[in-house]
Length: 127
Image (tube, rainbow, N blue to C red; front, side, top):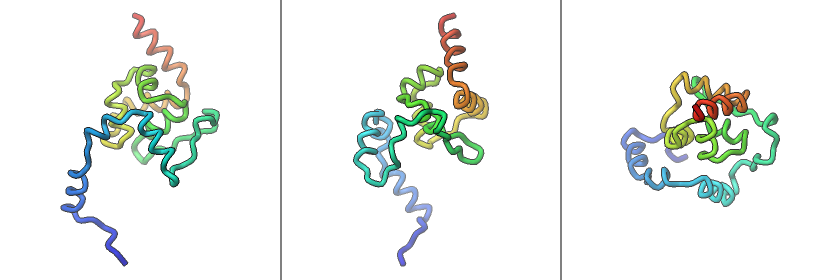
C-alpha cells in the first residue's frame, strides 16, 4: 500500500509548484469548461430552483461558492449585486481565506433573503 500522508516539506513543495497567478486569472467560463470536461464532477444544478439548493457550510465557516451557485450568478454578478470586492470573493471560493465573522453573517442573510440585501446595496450605491 502506498504512502497517503505528505510530509510538511512535500506539502510545501506541492503548494510552491502551483501557478497561483494562472488560477487567479481563471474566469467563470474557464472553470465551467473544466467542470464540463471532468467526468467526476458533480452534476450541474444551475437549472434547479434556488429553494432546492442548500449549501453545506464548513464548521465555523461559510460555503460562499455554494451560496453563489444557489442563485446561478457568476462571480462578478454576485460581487456587484451584493457589494463584495471580486478578488475577495475569489479568495473565499478558492479556500485561500474565509470571510470575517460579520461578512459571514451577511452571506447567511444573502442565502436566506438575497433580494433584501440586493435592494439595500442598490440604495446605498445610489446615495
